[in-house]
Length: 340
Ligand code: KG4
Ligand code: ZN
Image (cartoon, rainbow, N blue to C red; front, side, top):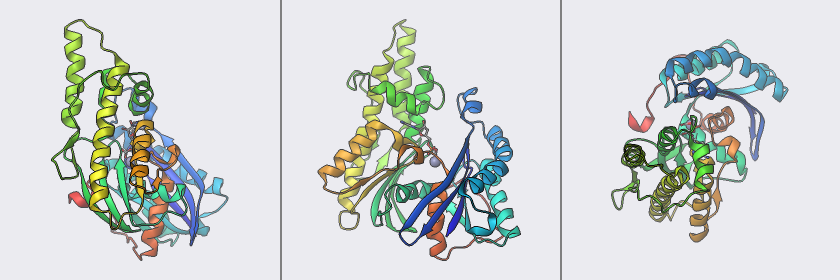
C-alpha cells in the first residue's frame, strides 16, 4: 500500500510517499522543504516563523510528493502525520492539513510519534530489520534509548534529564561562530582537533541508570570559550569540537552498553536514529560497540537521519497494521507520550 507521510514538528516541512507491503519497504518520494536558511538569521528556530513557513510549503510539497511518486490521492491507503512531540504551532499545520486531506478523501488517518518515526527510518535503510532491538535516538530535541519490543511497542529505558545532544552541538557551535545548526560543521571540525585537548564533564550521569545530562557539558564548553575571551587568548576551535564530540560520544556509548546488557535477552540488534545519527564519530563508535557485543548495527543513511516524511510514513504503516486510526478529534501535542 502507498502511505503519505507528513512531518512538520520543527523546521522542516516534509511529505513523502512510501510503499509498504509484506517485505516491501520502498521510498517513492521524500520531499523536504527546509527552513534552515531563514532560522539561521536568528541563530536558532523561531517557532512563529516556523509555523508560517510550514503553511506556505505544505500544499506544494504534498503535491510534489504525489507527482514524483507518480500516484494520486486515490491511490493512498493511509495518511500518517506527526502529532507529537515538537513545536505546537508547527505540528498543528501538518496535523490539520493531513486531517483535512484524509477526511475529505475518505483515507485512513494515522497519528505518529516523531521519535518513533526516527526509529522507523531504520526499516527503510535495512529492509530486513525487525524488532526486538535497542534504539538509540539522538536529535536536536531528544536523547533517549528504547527497547523496541515490536513495531508499535516501545519501552523507554532512559534519556536526558535536560538538553539533548544536538542542542549541545548547536549551542557550542554557535558560540564558536558556526552557522545554525552547528551539528554537521562540528562533526567535520572535530576530525581536525585533539579530543583530549580540553577536559569536559561526562554527559553520562547516575551510575547503573540510562541517564544523560547535556546542560552541564554545554555550559562547561561555553565557559571555556568565555574564559579564553576574557584572557585575550585564542581557543582552538577544532580541539574544542573534538573534545565536546568525544565527551558526547563516550557518554552515549557508555549508556548504550549498559542498556545492551540489561536488554541482552531481547535486543538482538542495535539501531541508531535521529538527526545526530548523521554524526560520523557517533556512527563509528556505536558500530564498534555493536561489533564488540557481536550484534548487528543499523543506522539510517544520512539523508534519512534528519526530519523527513518517509520515516513518518514507515512508522504509520505499522500503526495502521496494528489497527490504530485517528478520528476528527485528532490534535497535536508539544509533549512526548512518556512525558504526559
Ligand atoms: O532529528 P532532527 O532533524 O530534528 C529534531 O528532531 O531535533 O535533528 C536535528 C539535530 C540538530 O541539532 C543538528 O545540529 C544535528 O541534528 N545534526 C548533527 C549532525 N547532523 C545533524 N549533529 C552532529 N553531527 C552531525 N553530523
Ligand atoms: Zn527529529
